[in-house]
Image (cartoon, rainbow, N blue to C red; front, top):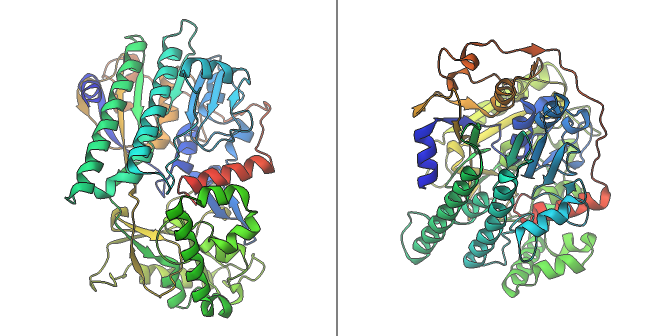
Length: 525
């Protein structure tokens, strides 16, 4: 990747720590607001609503208060352009334009202003603009790579054109998501040897070379005195196995399922057989489009993306959890929620009971062993208040678990055979992403200590001379700047946080359902 290598030589590089867990959502909210997830209430794509057992799609509370970076820059008189923000839907109503990303509804307006969609289609070329390259189970590796390269090419055309425009905005954010799709699909095979590993490596190299070239075109389109930030919202790595955390909670007596659901494991296995048959015949997507969801969940388990067993979302949504005997339950990526007494059938009392139970759970999770080898697993177990601070702590998971630095997934399915460990096909995210910064008064060819994703918004505002709201958790990354220059020596200008009351909109019920389907197709549910 010679373009990125040259940018490293021209500027500053750093690892970039992201949110817990390292997910697209909430990482992009933290990037745009400079705040930790408890200040806007988003911890995962799906979370258990406070005071209930409802599984609710995560929505940011930030956009309703217009507290994202582009809102603040707009208020200061700067024009902004956003292309392919993954979690932005509906698109922000800003000057100049905003284009929602992969979780948008294609049936509705995913650009602002509405007529900007026509401009995108014209620039993108044959077939028009595409929101994302879906990498469903029915696609081959070759089809996935071909689709990612096609969408990447459209991103290159659109972003390069907009960056080179004479009337371009003052601040521009462009996002390439296809690298995520390629890594999820292929990275687990790298280094394993054999024909499949070799073909996966070839396809990954082909894609990343193409992405490097696309970044080069974008860099060539901007001015030499522009500030340029290249970053990722998380890192990536192998994830060959999954620890079935809810099955462990069940075996430890912390999670109870209805007797019928345990006795009906054969029925669940039959459903998985139907699911597998539909996949082999290439009919699953067709069936999903034609069969009502109330029937589909009984035919093919919802959310059963990979791994054995039944998805915990199915258990919760179909009333198969015995909450009167359940103290804890986990969603994906190690987010463990307690069944506290503010919920309809909660049994964990606040105060001493809560703390005593949490200490017990943390101690046990800290001593997990590999069920296949008997060796102790390296676990990171954290309390929510050790990670988050803000008005939406009630919605935060009570305990967070990561296993072997994310190389083993904390997978939420409940197994049909009681096993605690299984093989996984998809690679996973890592806590540390990457950051490169180049521009006037930026150090050259240096590496600095780790930055945090919440630091980017205040740093951009500092560069652009806009006072930083005093409720941001992030800091200005002062190490980026050459000592003795204005940006390096000037104190950050903070002001009391004031957010405008501009109109903001949310997705309606139909759009929410389409977004849910897209999340499922992408493997997030």
